[in-house]
Length: 275
Image 1 (cartoon, rainbow, N blue to C red):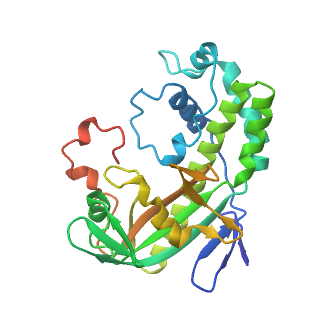
Image 2 (image 1 turned 30 degrees about the vertical axis):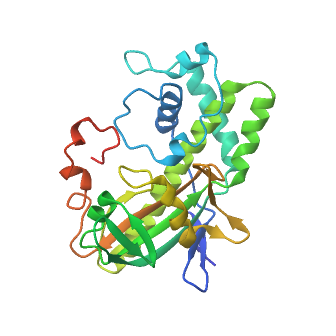
Image 3 (image 1 turned 180 degrees about the horizontal axis):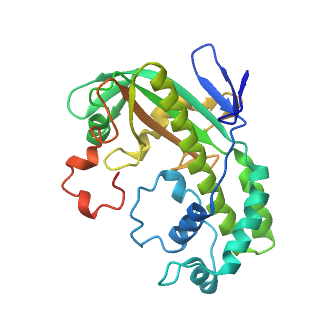
């Protein structure tokens, strides 16, 4: 195990090549947390950005109409000051329950007929994923998770019938997982740079035409370890705040060139598009 103070983690590698990153610095920021709060209480509003599986992993806490109104910004985009104060207070509390961990592999890609492709023997079917990985020599499969501990402060607030606090912690966890996922993608960029390669955007099962059910196929390669497995059960992750994704690597690729949304006829009106 070696430390990396700049990126805030320690890591080791298993015999079969799985890179495990632990002790990752995670900082859920206020704007992202407020966005998840708004989105969880007003999910039909066009958010204008993609929403990975973890963003809706836990819309389980029911709120009063008064609390819902508090979480939705006014016409000028402002949220009630009492909401911001509570978010900041609960962010410091929630982070103590995070166990940020990531699992990462660099794998070869084999394109098949139609919309199919294989990554390390795992067959996937998605036209958009295949477009993303065009001209990529390999890809990074990765899994990020905050662990099981996040459930504890949520249960405490629910048991006290403080649904407002529970909902805020759920949003903080989603913002924390997004930050963790972005940090791992920066790690992937460093790996690519050392090999003089470029990277694509990240995609995940459930994005566009890529079926969520294929999550289990990716977890067969990066599903944690035997003592700390991450599973896909009944349409959600366990532990809940987890995410699995794919990033392409290659000599002649880029986030712009390999963006499948650029060639999509529905791009203009799609809230899940990649800019």
